[in-house]
Image (tube, rainbow, N blue to C red):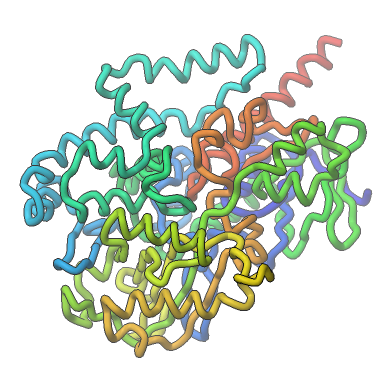
Length: 542
């Protein structure tokens, strides 16, 4: 082995950078190994057509933890977030619905469809905020390691205390959100189908499931525990795209001595006995380290980078069955003009152009999209969220031109076979799926297709190849009840430690899950430093 480090980080995504930063700040010699030619993982800004740049995968910000922002001094480095005036715009056959802009304004929107739902909204908002506050508090805490003895029991008791202090109605809300389907949960609050869909959309974002799937209500909650500029539950645009975040993070890492290597794909985690020894790159270079932390998801780490013989047989079997695949299809589109919506006409920039534009009018529409994806691979009427980042950040395109980010849901991670049993590949069908997405948008904004200058297509297979997201899973693994908190990625390893000593997980496949949070990287670094401190104390006593 040619070089030795205290810690190696596999993958230069945002969580890998966060983990590297905290380790290096504590005095460790750290190297980040990134397979691509750009740091940032799925949070990157890239030119996809001459003059047109965009956040090519992750595309909006809210969940990044304030402590991480403060510790890495991201705002001091120049990072800015532009808040949405309203959060979302939902066109549908009876007009449209706007969500956000304050409680009173949202109530007025709801009242156009249901006075009862308008009256209910403040109570619903309050109920979700009480539960979201608990999640915020738990995000930067390591889950108890089931079977981990007294320490784990104390951790479980400590984290459960905040739940036990809630009144009985709040505890019932927690139970509902963790076990119910999104439809069942929303049916208990609202009567109008458009209002339900406005909230139900969050339950299928990055979730290959129907709003009728038990547990889908939690995914709805996962998307509301963030904040922007101190405003809880808000979402915003990262000026310069999502890559601005990771570029500033890389700057913070380098300041504390982190070495960042690009085009350095890891081929194998090296193990000596039951302890990690370092990694081997695809180039053949071997690098030694006592600590290896993987920003790559558990499915990639344990199915491709760790030799099966180096893992306990039962652990390997369970990792074979770790669920990954979020049903996500991602497109970036260069436009000559803004979309002109049938229900709210106009090509000049307006309020609805600056928020999330969501084509997913009812829960039944969402359920049908999932049903079609299972049967045929995707729906002719897919779920589409469109963002037009150039309406708030004109640095991303030439003057007068625009960019559309299309985040599309319910595209089978692995396509079902043809009727004759032969296999299908996204390489053959990505263009047809992209055309279905464009047609869906064009039905609501008839100038959309004609305004397209260029497209960048990321099928689930493209997302896997380009970003290492197994099954195209933007969450690094299903956000289902059996893969959350202490069970993420599995019980007994929810504390960021793998079954091999010195091998840790620091990506979204660990608690608290997907999204640009920085929490897994923060928490994994904390556990790594705690382990090194413990070893140091033992050696000192010896």
